[in-house]
Amino acid sequence: MNRTIKRSIAVLVLVIALFAFTASAYAAGYYIHNPMENPKAAADIIVDPDAVYGYAPNPDSVRLGAFAKYDWSDEAFVAQMKQEREAYHESIRELYQTKADMEADGKTVEEIARTVSNRRNEMRIEAYKDDPDGLATLKDSNLQKYGNETGGTPEYYFEKTGSWEAVIEKAFSTNAGADAILGLYDEYYDTYYISDDSDPTESETVAEASQAGTEPTTATLSESTPDQSVNPTGNQSKTSPQTGDTVNVVLIVMMTATGAALLSVIKLSSRKEKR
Image 1 (spheres, rainbow, N blue to C red):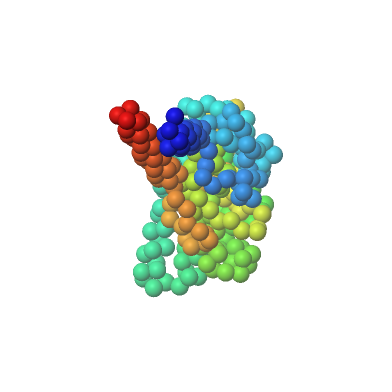
Image 2: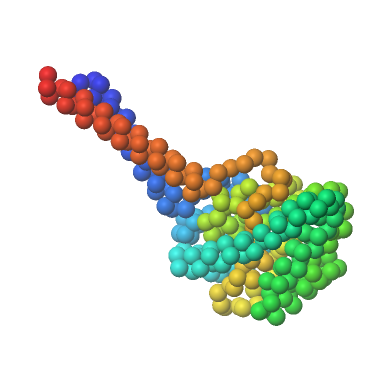
């Protein structure tokens, strides 16, 4: 066999192998960014090959441990929780609009920080409007930790961080582990607040779900796995593509390369036959 044809076939095999690996990895729910490299996410989740997205809540996690009892290999259950999680993400867009409007009005960073921080606490409380037992548990937890049943105040976070910008970032910070178990880690990667502070804020603390023995509701999952928004507040050091967009590009490139390699082999084979 002609050496050129052998090389073309080798290239074709390699491209097909890479294509198959990428496709299977995406289908299995693996992420471009490794959730276990995020200290906060790693504290809340464990690697679980049987889980739909490869991760499940860590039973020892303060924030997500209450949800370890559910079956995260159940595709229907995970799909339902993912849908509810995304709806909750959407609701947080209000904070970004508030921030943008206040900036346009010339408000100071401190004024913006106080407004979005207080509103974020209100939204957490509102998430439990249909769950009085869960709301009581949340308020009690907040009261013990912050001396305020609605959660940490802007003053609390300013004293802790020394920056009103950081207070704003805290208001938008989210629990990455929750997204990792629901297939959303890459999509919201740019919104995570990752710092050296390992002490969870009230939005990152899980009170035992009040509906013991039942599936978690939107409120309990959202509160225990802090909400996310798709617009970063500038606290991230790098920007990363969303999983779907990147994988689609990779697959298209690989499919194109595969087609080109296959066409090359066919042409070379045809030339050899003519000779």
